[in-house]
Length: 102
Image 1 (cartoon, rainbow, N blue to C red):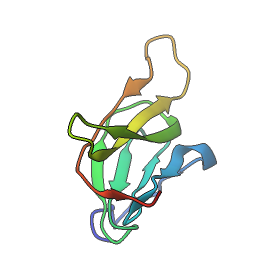
Image 2: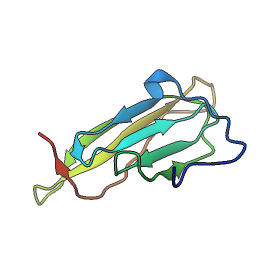
Image 3: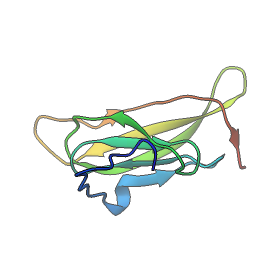
Image 4: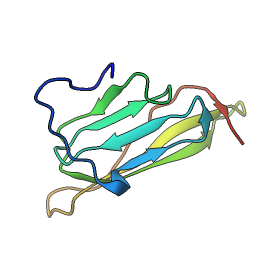
């Protein structure tokens, strides 16, 4: 898969650390126990690392946001790291206009 680590990548993804949006093409997002966040805007054909250096990601959610012109934008709403005394959930956003399947 283009954009995902190919060698010595032994990642763990928890069930709640993966989500998809309702756009066409479908966007897929997942976080790893090693603190990386990946996203695909083309149904998984290509991937981008969105963030790294997070604590273990245990939950990822997406949302649809309407901008001022009425266009719908996919937004990676939140990646929730595992509980820790020193970290807080980080709100994340990536915006690129696509059509919703609604």
